Length: 304
Length: 253
Image (cartoon, rainbow over all chains, first blue to last red):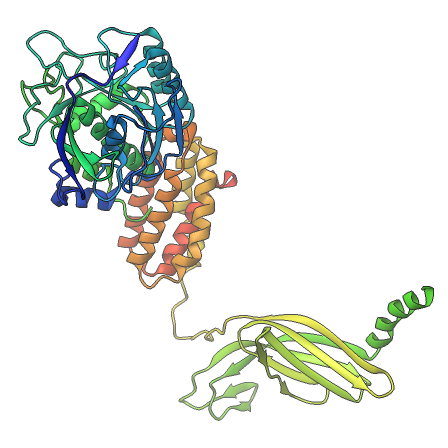
């Protein structure tokens, strides 16, 4: 079985020499306060995508492996590097800007890859010490090996964030696999206005929606480029969960031990959007990043 | 070859024979006295005296050599003069760790030398009879903190993290003791604890150190602060040492 970059992921034409100083999905008036408390220290994000191309705003991956026969980990597509930047980019480009990065090329330069490689990569990323796995990919049908690998990752305390897909929603479930898998954190996309993206797949398995439209991040040919899709929302969610895990670990809290624990967290810390409660378009809603960090930082603890 | 070896072996014993005795005896000296007089077994001093007691050492050298030189060094670069008391005794004073060296020379027997180490402590103020008795040492007053730390550690059953925290806290205690103020001491302690907890691996990550250890301790320490038991960074350092002691395997009660 083949997995693909979610169809209809849009690469916008404009290339920026420098990243705009105040990205809409990382407004400085909010994120400077968040980063003052946590930047993802001590946490590793594994990005399973089209690979990685060095960029001034990207950390050097601790581990970089290719599961595509005949292709190095070098990103000949751009999708993977863009996702890496969203999750862990430095200089205000990424969410968890001090998290470590591991890269697993599971999609070819043309944007597709076999399930065997993806399943192996999920297991290896877990064994390599990932705390969060970001997978901006999907397929129309389930794959046993991939689902088992995700179960394995979650059993080891890894949070697996997967794109819902870009099929939109017309009343019937459009979420792809492995986003639909019970142990995945299924991620939709919303735009600058706080509305769900038209293309964002919907269904009962949706967990939450993250910023996914016109997201500016690292370009493989230098500078920065904007892309749109649940592919972009997914590394944002992965980066945010990296911050959460870093904070929880640092403060001394017990780690998430199941995807359900993460969902309980979302239920508490997402702003409910769309239909009341969990719904097919927004899931639990959109994350209240500043509130999450403030709640986990335990600023009342000043002696021990 | 045999003669050369014998020469090397015998030479030190010949030289050492020049110094019959080289020793340092610690004593205490009172300074800051004006007009001291010994009357009826009491030392009476002027009303403007500001007495302080400091540890000193009397260095004694017994030798038949004609020339004797005694000197002390705090480091390779810092030598300290000793005050000569008489032909056999010198006075060493001032807080520090010293290497005291004696060198003797005699035209008949040649040069000899020896070295000993002397440590002199901090000066202390003599007890003021009008002052109420001091509180017990801080380490004795924070047994409650040690118990809370030990109970939390026991409940968590995470000896790896307990050990790392104990090491970290023991390491930061001297910094806390000399901190400029309590807020800066608190910041360094919280940073130390959080940086240690951030490195948790494996099953340690599933332990609730926040709920079972940090929060109870934070509450107890805050209460100690409110009741006046913690006033200075030194008090807080004693708290940190009590926390560390509670984390040790033997700290559990």
